[in-house]
Length: 464
Image (cartoon, rainbow, N blue to C red):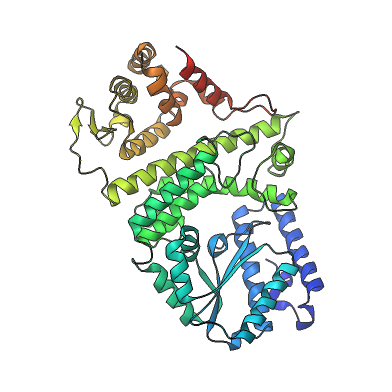
């Protein structure tokens, strides 16, 4: 951010609604120009939060709150993570050790009113430490926001008391928090019919969207204290390759969301038909007719699939490896390569799929043949993802793999038990080059409810 835009340079005379609106407009225009010039979106998202930090700090001083050691101003939620898009909510918490005096309460109301007058989307709460504890224990959303609290101004002592309260096991035990977040995610996914393929998707809330990345962060933060995706990898919650993939996916989703917010007047995260063409142009997709939109949406849907797959695998690994759920059941040997633990199939060797890629098809033959197998163990999903990315040729070029695939097509249960999972886990795309080309392919009209690959899978399931 150029120094001339910094709120720390604002004079006292500039701290009025009209002048501040002009300054905010100048900063937003600066960010728009940088985005359209292909400036890294991470810098812009973090830079917007930094700008807001400085503005709130300057106003906090102007209102004289720095003379009140009994209160602290904290950023919470996405703002607490230091992430703001052009129309993001600016969630703040003013916390005190005890109930505020009436006069101080009135000044805080004036402070909040000024932020609203500046057309900032402010979500605020004014609470004592005991109120934070009481409400946070009852409300998962409040607890999650408090977990991401970041001190902006005011009493460090009060803020450290808040952190100590939130970090205590009695506030939200790690396992309880995890189970609550899993239920919350399931309910959110159900609202979008449990599919990443929606014609007008919500960038934030759709399965595979930004919320799925946030859920991973929240669970890791509660259990390990990891505050960033990078710290999650340091704790072993995800591998370095998975960390890089999540960052890459987040970056693309951030670019789409930032571009969308540039086109909207009010907060929304739905990538509607009305805005898809303009967003595609902002992101640099070119071509004739609907080609730019279809190219953007193809990359978008593929990104959602990657995030959804990582989210599912990592949460299952957390559940199994860290909370020890499901590990009490003794594995039942299927053959030299596979075993069943509970309702999940596991590879018995750590590099099975890399050494013998055709065994990937064997796994799905077992799934089709055994009604007790309902899915793939998370450790085996991780192994499959690694092997899939290291393949230097399509599986259909391997004679043994081709033989096993043909056996699958003849199996009476394959269509409704195996092929859907093969698609979700990227095996169909790894087997057939033709299938890999249609993954995420959409048509820019209202007559096709699903992408080409999703439509094809649904068709296969309905074949008798």
